[in-house]
Length: 319
Image (tube, rainbow, N blue to C red):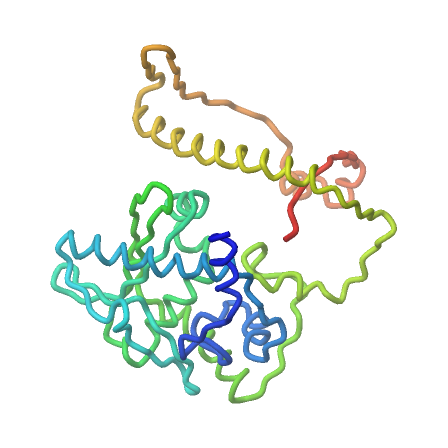
């Protein structure tokens, strides 16, 4: 009863006075078509109550990070309810960075994100380039008039479940930001039309991916619909346990690899179980298509390739 009332309270859309109804920095994408969609409201998203609650949780996570940074002795400005509004381009578009932080007597930009284990791990292993939207957001902030003298941004993330922090410093990159800013100016001021790209530049990273494919005609002949709440309930329960176990295993695996260090074998024990962690190096041989084509020509490749049909059944939720 209480939970239902709380969820119902989040059906109503609330404006923060900057993001609703207008293009802001968070609505700009490295993909011109995504920016065009956002500016013309071609694919506006009506958030579900649970999504609104998740977004609000992100704000609480941000406040917790600010408290942690202050506890560590860092001086902060323009944070919390006192965030500064910056202006980018000729329009200009507005944005509100999370704040500024003084490190080694220099004031830099501060951007805070709370991340799931998968995103947290990707950032640690692959860097900011794996998150083109975040990279664009930071670089546009740094391209604003208000931050023209700021050298870069501390991108600080917090793993939601374990509260582990991680940060990277992103230097200002005017070469990256300039064409994006010019593109936004052309879309808004120049009334430029942008066509749907043939190949998506942000695969699996853009919420407009379905909109970009809306012109495709789907074959519905092989699709069947069945109403069975009991089966759905059992599947969701099983999926919850699978995902929880996977996250725990990934986290423990990262800890064990850290403990392994430069050794080849590590044994970890408790009163009932002995775990063996072993570094394994495998050498596999495979044919490089690029080298084959270079030596024998592309036509020859057709004579040695064959199509294998693999049939699978995959279950994915659609809410």
